[in-house]
Length: 507
Image (tube, rainbow, N blue to C red):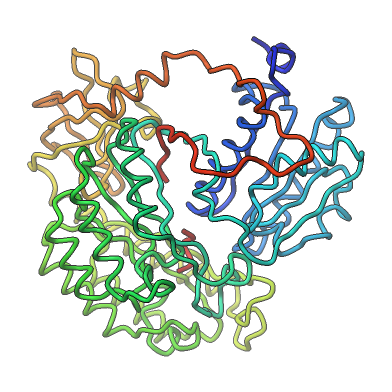
């Protein structure tokens, strides 16, 4: 069925596409936007379609060139919109929250601008723009409804994001997120666990607890051990095989969380904890409330409690005022921590942040040279750490879309408990995303492992059943009365759908 045919189907208002930029929080928000649009009577645009009836940009404001990227994309859509009466374009997310009226001034063909706090208004604003024939700009300055109360169209049938909080109480000098996401607001533990249980009932077997500073969970509800209690509660949910969380802040990483990780079998031996810099002097300038010794102390405790844990991090190179000695301190921490993976970034100015106005901005050539040295060191360590996996027997959760060459190599791909990516020989029997295979690692590369010779065992799972149901069932037709007009959208706990994988790497 073509895009136009789908648009004319009974009860269908049109097709939609959501384009997501930025962090996992944005990915999760995009699932909400998709759920709202489907609840309002839209259907996903077919892959490869020239253009959808509604295109939504969920934007990021973290990188310096985020606005250039947005306006470049909007410019490409302008002629398509001019040639397609009734097509609508909406811009949401962090850049929309920051720039507000500027977007419509620069791109007057945009129909709707909405912020991070009022995602739930998207269908209403689209309908209002259609009826009134003028752009609708509505930016709330505080959260209107916790995102998890909104309908959701999850991208994965076997793995799901579950938000535990939104917002951030930190004041890092390089980060604009607290200005755009607001102060931290925690969900009630019972609401979180109820959502997880509903997802597991639908076949989800892996969840990732999500927050800007996920282990600060509890500060808003007055319980300093709330996050460790939440991890332990997840361990009591029957059918939930894997629990992960991102991204924790070293300031809030307490011994009770380490104990909960070590003692809860379905909490995976994986930790992503942003470092940003190994220099205590630079960390102070960043307003990071820990120093090198504190960070390495957490790593030591985690390794003592969970020897097989794989650690990953975020690092910024070239922060204003960073000296060669400061950079050497970062290299020292990388050598000591022996990260399995590091997401490395060259510092770029974030308009509106204190760091953008600091003295001592580092020349681009210096930043590039340091960045290349850091990447080379981390590549060496990643490869050495992966080589230590050769000969190990691992249980993998089969993944969808993780191996770009799987069709050519006749392999499948999956994630080990510590989240390492493993490509394995396709077995004779059918294996579905969400199923679990047992393999022996035979080869290591810096960014992946190979298990040649086929799985030692295959376990079909409820998660695989859920994937199969989703991929073989026809798209459900919108129910009568789902369309949203000028009133408020329906708000409430949606019937949970199988879910997607995937905060901001600046925390």
